[in-house]
Image (cartoon, rainbow, N blue to C red; front, side):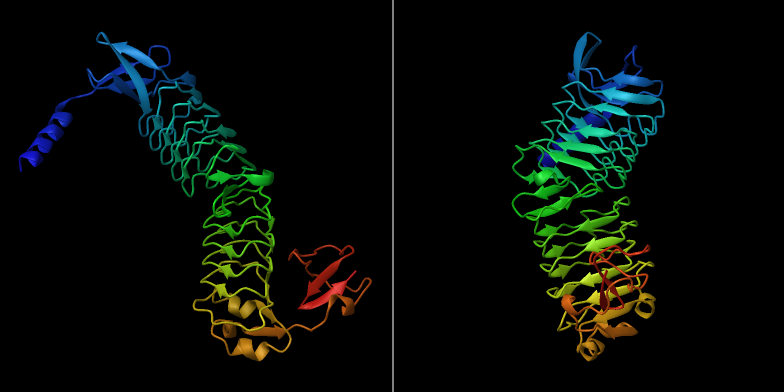
Amino acid sequence: MKHLLSLFVLCLSALSAAADEYTDPVTNVVYSYQPGSGTAEVVGGPDAKGDITILERFTADGQEYVVEKVGGSSFKQHKGITGVSFPPTVKEIDSEAFRDCTSLTSVRLPEGLRLISLYAFSGCAISSVELPKGLHAVCWMSFSYCNRLKSVRIPSAIEYIEEGAFYFCDSLETIVVDEDNKLIDSRDGCNAIIVTATNELKMGCQGTVIPPSVKRIGESAFKYCQTLKEIAIPESVDTIGTNAFFKCRNLSCVSLPKSLRTIAPYAFMNTGLQTVTIPPGVNEIWGWAFAGIPTLTSITSLIEKPFDLEFPICDEAAYSSVTLYVPAGTKEKYMATAGWKDFKHIVEMDNTSVSDTISKGDAVPSPSYDFLGRPTDIAPRHGIYVRDGKKYVK
């Protein structure tokens, strides 16, 4: 009881101790400090403009105060700031500190920084980010909606980049992880973040080339990457995680490998795919993996023994409009299997090999698709094409 009473008294004392403020006469940045504490934090600067430098320390009432933090919402929606430099004493940039500073194009982060919090730089106009060597964590949505952001460099000490840290960064094309980082890497210049121990691709961008050592496309790895147009998944990946390509609206072409076993919920939901080929080894397809795709015209399943689908994989309307192509001799199996039988148009493919393809020369119908699922809107070049489950050679 005495312990609880002591804590209550301490809380009351903290509330009653009013903070003082100091305004830098050069930059008009405002700092808050508790008298006698020796530390301070940035709390605002409505009159600050242009390129500003955060003070390392200042003297007030005869005492020196060291600036260790940029407080939450300090410069939120401040349109007049174009650049900011931090001293090495700043350890934390709090939630929404620079959110929607749409004129902020240049940021120099300090080596002493340990944490970048929620939405800290969301909606800024920065084009590149070099995270400092001492940084340990980047929180959810901290650099989201930075539409001009093209490159990110990640240091060796970083331990945690939360999902969504770079959501809606539509111009992002380069991701480089320091070679000394023991937890994550960007091997083979892949422009992605890969978890070293598990070979899971944790975050990608429009410039990502997935290395052949990756085993899994992680949850939300490309989520909201609206500039991604096509992606080839190598013959090493066995799982595509939940929301992996969710709302990649311009993704019209994806190549799925024979090694693939699991397609998780919402994996390709709200993409721009026109056709999908499901490899023969897939044994799990979870709910709404291909839902919300109005452009989808056909799904080709190479699975010889269809398994029950526990949840719908498409929208209700898609079951009527999308043609499901299945291996020769398996139509009745698909028509009797939960989930697959919901497709109104199930067509068996001709059991032809590449050597006995249906036609050669100029007889390739349009539209047809290449083996990566890309529509051939113009006259096809030399190669192998697919139309209505049949192979054509030009």
